Length: 224
Image (cartoon, rainbow, N blue to C red; front, side, top):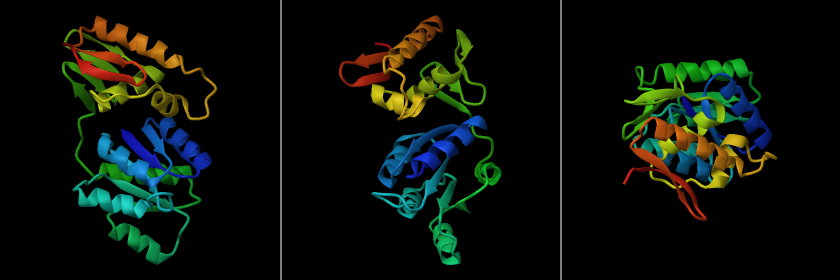
């Protein structure tokens, strides 16, 4: 299950993302409301966790924009506010649930499970592009010719490609989302994992490939 986390307190954002990832969620993290709305509009997310008090655009505005666009995605609001009026405002804006900081990680996970369990019946866990599919539940990358079970960074990178087909993703974006914005790992590691994935796509006889655009990044494209 793929979740967007929007939280401007970076230490808290890192902690929450780690909790979710350890519980088998795939997480993208942003730090302001404008990025949250952009990522939610462009991405393929199963749920969102939004802080209310964020720079550029607050969480309630992000939520209202989503609902105005017809999105029924489950949304959990996080905030330091605990007054009844604030909770009512959040729920009236279309939130599925509301959690006041500080909170226990067990309660956060329980609330996410509850709101995603009731949101939709057994969604397909696969992302598909051409004859290639990635199962988010099993981490299996497959075509009619075979399959590989991906682990760790390969899975995260392939999920980003398949969630954004034909879209150029920069090396910096891979570094931030997979290795973390404060990593000391050299950015050349992105090329190493691109090479691994290209070999797997060739072995699987995928009808798509990873294209490098000089000075811009990489994109998943159909074979010419």
